[in-house]
Image (cartoon, rainbow, N blue to C red; front, side, top):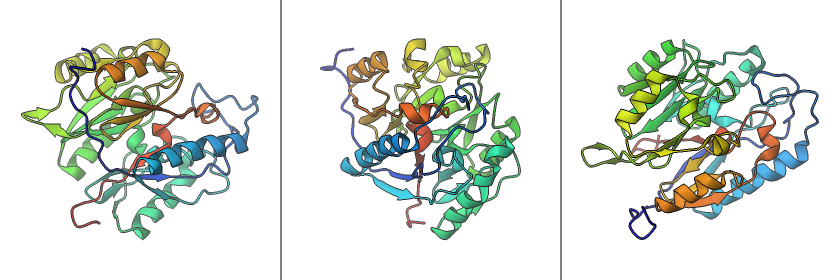
Length: 288
């Protein structure tokens, strides 16, 4: 498909929750990317994060901030702090005790900012493992969120949930292996060209589900997956990606998207990228 024949993409306003990485460091290891012996540069992390924040604002998106908490170095990865649809915020319950300190600050923020808070019973790591595509929730399991949370989130939001099993520990959250490029539902159901994914991150059954439900999805190479190319945010036209994911960048352009490259290499030392730092806040029509 050439850019001349690609569908016209439309940028849609987004509201994001972010957290300035004032306390970012790697002092423990809960994923293969984290090496406490490797030095981290907090000032560099803040500067790179600011570029992402400013890129969202420059393109017309609203960015809200949750205050960083000392002793919570991973709080910058706000995608793990909840899953929000129609003004309802499903709170997090982290697998690892190192991140449990983040749970109440995120849920307090939702309650204080007009969202209807749903406290979780099951282990889940928010939009790290839950991605909304049209009316369907893609839900990851295998390393962090449990399968029981898939049932819980489906009952809470009254939506179909497609459970997908991750098998590569480097891609421990769903948002490291799938990028939702346009979550708006198209005629006759979900627009089947609106996700990209890394096939090798999933088991055979999950790949079969993805192939059946999204036959026109962009299949991303291992090389681009390895640099967190899929840990991306999209407004339906502008897709914020790692500058090192050059193959994925070309694929996006071919499909009519506008790649916006942002380097978060310092935050990758903690196992997070652009999407990890970005929690979408979907309010209901009344603004709640």
